[in-house]
Image (tube, rainbow, N blue to C red; front, side):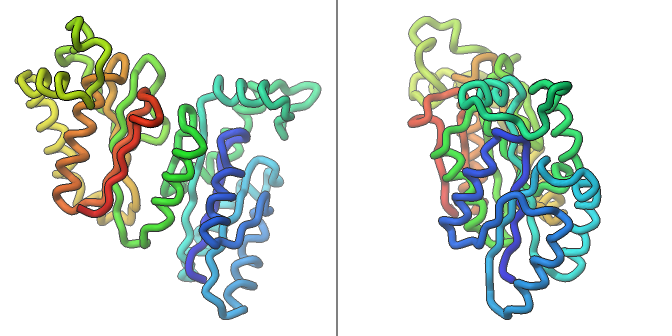
Length: 294
């Protein structure tokens, strides 16, 4: 078997979309596989002697006891030499509540005694064992279907030995990205928002870039973050990680965080690292820059 991917996450977070994306990438996909059947599925695929990529979705519709045993089943896969990865999708609870309200779908854990918000909290607890094993966590709160497709496609397309870095700008007022490995707060830096002719611009615009380039504290902060990441990168790469997400946050997610995320992305791309940058608060057509190997 070439690759075995497990998609999980709370209901409404985009698991079905992710599975369809993998199906388009020629993965053999199974939705809502009972966790207890993983060894049987893998054994059957291996017995066919074909190089098959398999992706399965495992979520709270599983029997609770099976979900509790998932970490053991996952360890058994790796002990058998199977290349297995977990991709865990999630969104903040208000967004999930809104999605269920808009589609009028029923959450699998709701009942006469359990409301939607309680069901979502229970779901988090049930899936904690899977979430803790994820090599990639994706926050789909503000992500479009096209962005999710690009992200999953790019991550899956890389070999198991490829280490990818992702730099993401965000606004603290909208919440910290749940998929961030490291979060840096740059709200203490000079804010272009208070300069009238820069207010409507973003950290992608030359006028803002020129202003921030001239700020000593901004240059020092960018260098310090760059130094921290560079210092720990060898250890992170050696720990069998495939992905590293660095989140840079400011007040509105328009100027300072965007500028620094772009600077970090440019630096590490030039050093032959697989890297991408995403600006959560910007318009979709402006927010993502994908970078191939530099």
